[in-house]
Each structure stands twice: as C-alpha cells, then as structure tokens.
Length: 110
Image (cartoon, rainbow, N blue to C red; front, top):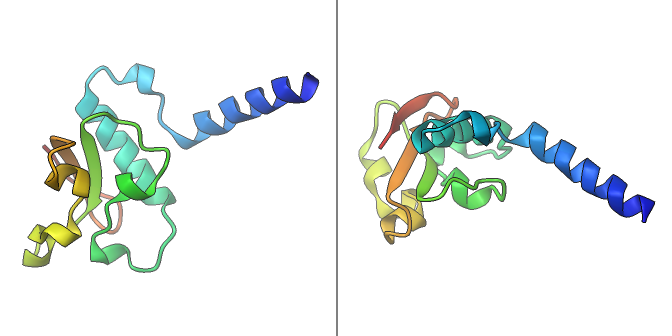
C-alpha cells in the first residue's frame, strides 16, 4: 500500500514539473501558448526545422481543441503543406493552433 501512495505522489510531482499550472490560465489560448513553448523546449529531436506537430508527438499535450506546431519564421511555402501541419487541425478535430519557431519562440496563436 505504501508503494502505491509513493508512486501516486511521484506522478503528481513529475507532472507538475512537466506542464504549466493550468489553473492560472483562464484563457485556453494562453494555456496553449505556454504548453507549446514548454513542449518545444523539452522536445529532443534532430530535425526540428522540418515542422513537426509537437502536440501529436508529446503525450503531455492536453489542451482541448488546440495543436502545437513548429514553422519557419518568416513562414515558408513548405509550412503550408498539409504533411507539415498537425493532422488534428487538418482533419478538423482541433480548431486552433499555436506555431513556434524552431527556437521555440511564439509565432502566432489562432
């Protein structure tokens, strides 16, 4: 029983370190921006500039109706190709997106 309690506490502590405190964000757009920047900073991959959809690759992403994507700044034609965008957005399962640069700086949130 003790290990169950300790495991639960450990999960709470780790999840608190991974994600911004959602309670302090009343606006979903602000929460999505904060999560997107944080997930980008924590993302470890070699081809960041190719435009991966972070929210589809990060299990911690939990902002309903929003996705997080990396794009060039300034945007390039390649950023508009469906294969370089979040499928949830393309398929209409999400209606808003946050874009950040490969250096994790906010481009826009729509």
